[in-house]
Structures are given as C-alpha cells and as structure tokens.
Length: 163
Image (cartoon, rainbow, N blue to C red; front, top):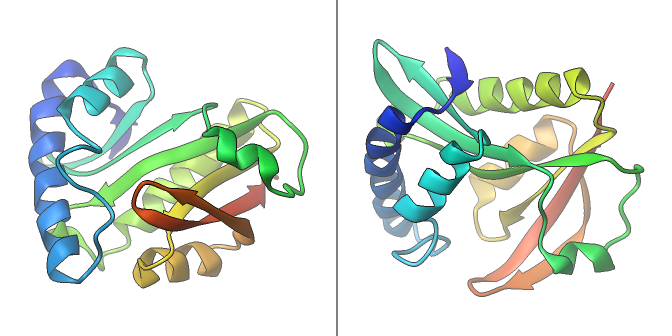
C-alpha cells in the first residue's frame, strides 16, 4: 500500500534509507551519503505532506517525495512539457525488497497523483552511474532531456508528460 508518510514512519524510512546507502556503496554507486538524504530531509518531507511510503504488513519498504521543487540547474534544460510539473525526489526501495516491482508501483502512484492534481509532467534526476535506476525510468517511458552537475557528479534529468 502506498500512502502519505506520517511522523511515525520517519524512523523506519530512515532505517531503510541507511540500508539503501550501504547497498548502493557496495554496488559502487556513490550517490548518497551521511550529508544527503538524512532524517532531517525525510522529516521535512513528511511535515509538508510530501513524503510517501510503500508499506507492507506494517513495514516501510520504499519511500519517495513528491513536490514542485527543483534545483536551479533544471532551468538550463530543454524541458518538453509546460508547467505545472511535479518532481520525484528520493525514491528508494529496501534492498531485500528490490526486484519485486515496488519502484514501478511508486512511479505509477506518482503518475496518478500528477494526473489527479492537474500537473502537465513529472520531472526528476537520477545519478548517471546508477544504471539500474536509469534503465527503470527509460523503460517507464521517461525521456532524457539533459544532464546537470550536483555535488556527487553528473545526474541525468528525465521527463514524462502526464496523460
């Protein structure tokens, strides 16, 4: 079940995040660290009503944030759809639950949320060295519109029009 995160979810979501960070490092993906994302960021997402969790049997298995915020680097890209748009942030799935379609369900939820709230498109970025994430997004019909540089390196930026 996917739902808005509540304050009681933050501890579990952070535990899963730490597992994801370790797993990514073991895979050679140096995308996230102790600086970002962290408990403060997830708490702020939740307090603003922007955090979402995938929960199964009372356990948080995945997390994402949805909002209209993007980094100023996005302004230099050639986006194909008009505003308003929504951005997916911090989408991650517990390593033991990966490969079961949960990220696809989270993306589908974001698409439905965008359509229900009259957004024209969904935008986000993915670390260029995270092959798994980039493949998933491309398979889901997201189009690469360019790259940006953040603290950790080059990130691919994707967009998909909402239907």
